[in-house]
View (cartoon, one colour):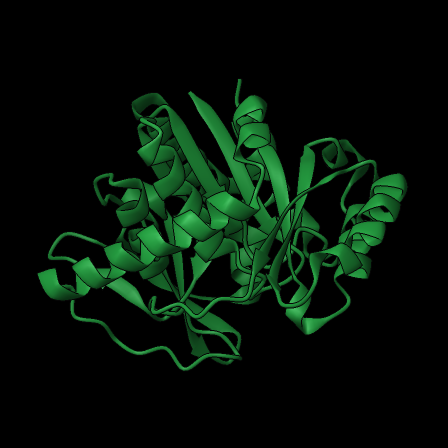
Length: 279
């Protein structure tokens, strides 16, 4: 049983798609793989007669070729406005909660227990759990309530890879700043940086990689090019996601995209280094 966690310097950095790609890559290598996100905020769920979880973890499960269960996303928050969300626990509607109530009275008690139980189940049943963080681990105003990033990585004994969206600019500062703002006890968990959505000559970046390692003591293990993807998006400020019908035709399209994505990621990330982290 091993765990790897993908965190980001921001929302939209590429965590979800990178986890999906890594799930496919390690499934192809013969690992029994499962994705996991302790807490996801999304209005786009995967609904069955028995449960509802975020569709992001479902797409990652397709990548991993594993069964879809509520343990993949034990806490789903569906925003309804006015700082409130409908909270789903283990795939079942729990209740509507204001952010203040959720953070101060739920997340570090029942929330952490629930997420930890799901994580333990996956770790018992699979060779590798590839975890996805939420937002950024450096939100210092929320760190004591954050059960989706470093606390969960520590509980899983997971190595962390930190991904950044270089197309937006400021990636070097984002990585260095994130390392400076996460708590010192968690900094040692970060084993590598990944630059995502790059276009241009990678040789232009390499001097920056060396300086970044000098500053943070963390190496860059990959640079993923900006590529068009035909995968269902999560809802965010920068996307207009659409509902999807989960029929065989659409699932086959997703599978084909996952194969394409995994090949590109595999050729641009040091997978051998990641595998050594897992030993």
